[in-house]
Structure formats: structure tokens, C-alpha cells
Image (cartoon, rainbow over all chains, first blue to last red; front, side):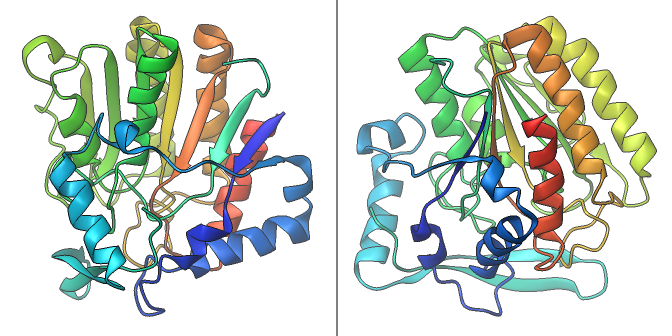
Length: 102
Length: 204
């Protein structure tokens, strides 16, 4: 049996529809898999939230708290990054943080 | 690990492989796969974990996390030069971790045939020799040829081929244990089809 780990909460990370990493990536995938019948072949499992201790095995406490603080105040922007695009050469994207359960 | 399932795919977002221990970048906040690898090491005391990263971008955050760790083999194929700029061939690990990072930078015009043959060769040789107890996949689908911000010439069906090669190695080395986590992939109508091919490979 193959497990598919999924939670509706993944849709709530709101980056805005004009951001490439938006919630439609997940919404469209779920819809499509249900239509084709692949969803029904899988064991759908809802995950638990990672503990602070588990996150701390990789990330600094400062990093975790910084993101929790941003999410707690309704959202914000973590960092301005630059994506290299073959046509547009450099395209700025920001990484918004909203509605994260931390 | 408890034989309750053969393998798993995590349909998650945001992605994680660019997130370093101290900062989020490239749409990533927390490094999902890195946390999973640490969890497996702590909970099940696994000696050797392989992280395969076929996202079109180099997973700099995952590499940073395990750069000096000989118990985690990080293997990435990615478009290069490209965001985030890391992932050259000579980045192979440091200290005790020398040799446990494998970067295969690929030019934009790499054909699917060449991509698959390189992938298979690394898995058949380096990954097998490492004797993994568990395989994690950072499965980005932005090497798909029509991806709006990535693209490396792969077709939809190639994701099934990649999955089957990986499953074969996992069957030989670690009782088929694979957990795959979604990273990138931004073509809104074709991403689901790429994921389905990957799932079909896992289901079989």
C-alpha cells in the first residue's frame, strides 16, 4: 500500500494567486487524482504537527521563532529572492508567510 | 518502518529544500526532508539515509544541513547555472562528510535520455554502495519541460521511470522504504499529471 500524506491546512499557506508557489498546486492535484481514480488507490493519512524539538534537530530556535512571529501577526515577508528566468532574466519574488500553524 | 505501508508520498507545501538551518529562502520555510531524515535517525537509529533531490533547483538547505554528516548521502541533479547558485560538481561534503554529497549540475539542453541514464548510474553505483536503510526523495516536478519557472526537458512519463528506478534500488537495499516529499513544480495543469506518474510508480 502507498500512503499519501495530506492535510487541508496546506491550502492555507496564502502566497497570493500571482505567486508561482500558490495553493492551486495542491488543489488541482487533489481534484485530478480523485477524477482519475488514483486517489482511491491510496491510503490517505493526515499528519500530525511537528514538535518544536523535532524542528530544532535542523533549524535554529531563532529561525523557528521568527517565522512563528510573522505567522502570528497575520503574515509578512521573509526574504526577497531573485529567480533566474530564461526570458525575463531576473524576476523578484517574495516569500509571504500567513496562516501557518506553529 | 512498522510494515504498515510500502512507501509514501507527501503532498505538502510550502517546499523545503532551500531552507537552511538558519533561514528560509526560495519559497521554503522549514526543510521538511531534513527534519524527516533527523527523525528517522533519532527514532529508528538508522545508520544510512539517502536523500535524492530531483527538483530542478539545487537543494542548498538540505546540502548545508548534512554537509559534514557521513550518515546522510545527499544526491541532487539540477539545472546549472541556476537558482540558488550552489550545487557545483566539486561540492562533495566536508570533514567526515566528504563524499556523502553528490551534485550533478546539468545544462538547460540536457535530454531526458541523458538525465535518466545519469540518474540510473548514480543509483546503481554510489547509492547502492552507500547501503541505504531508507530513501527520501525531494520530489520537485519543475524539471518538467513546460514548467514556467524551471524546466529541464523532462516529460510527464519520465517521472514514472525515475520512480521505478528508485523503487528497484530501494527494494534491493532497504525493503522498498521510500518517502517522497513534494518540493517544486509550478505548471498548474500538468503538475497533477507529473505527480500521478510518480504515484503510479510508487503504487506498483
